[in-house]
Image 1: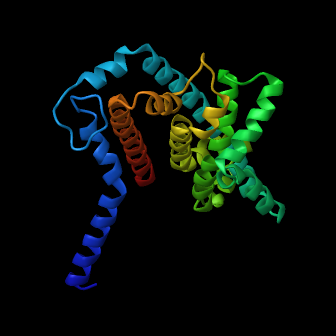
Image 2: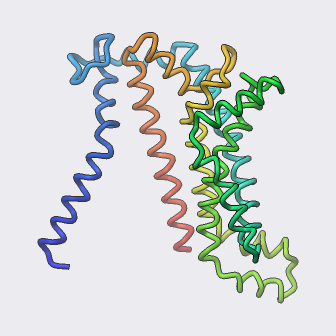
Length: 261
């Protein structure tokens, strides 16, 4: 590729990147506004909205609730999704394609439709506003991301390595634990991170099954926007942007190192 073409391609990629992150970047200066309004550009500088986030019990409790739900969801979704992806990879029939389509259905069906169905079921089972209810609903939404990530790793996995381990005397479980699992670990890690972020950021289903006793951070943000609309929301958005970037960046770094090994 000639140099002018490379420069044009680089500029185009830069413009696309700026276009994608611009709405997020705008939130950062808004979080330091000295007035109680979501104004851009801010008229002054103040840390008070960050202080309000950490000192207000409504914000802190919703953050803790989101972390609890997201951590448990990520672990459950990774276990279930990895098992499902491994089973689908070992199936040698057309049924595997149908099962794969069914398992990723939560990614395709509109969130409102899922939320209404989950809410109707939870009313009968008394799971509305409970930690178990949030974990089950978010796990259902996160499992497809794990299946896709792990399946991608299994596609490039050389099954002859597993066969060689078994031929040398290892059991199937030992071969899976010592050969397969370490090689598909980057895909599992990606699935784990996507499951965590999916649960932590989920809002549609959470709005339907929330309660005054258990409210996740996205629900609290929505409530604050409709009630106060002060820059605390921008401060929370900035913190989430930084935390999510660090988590995804760390996951990509660890995954790349494992691939090199």
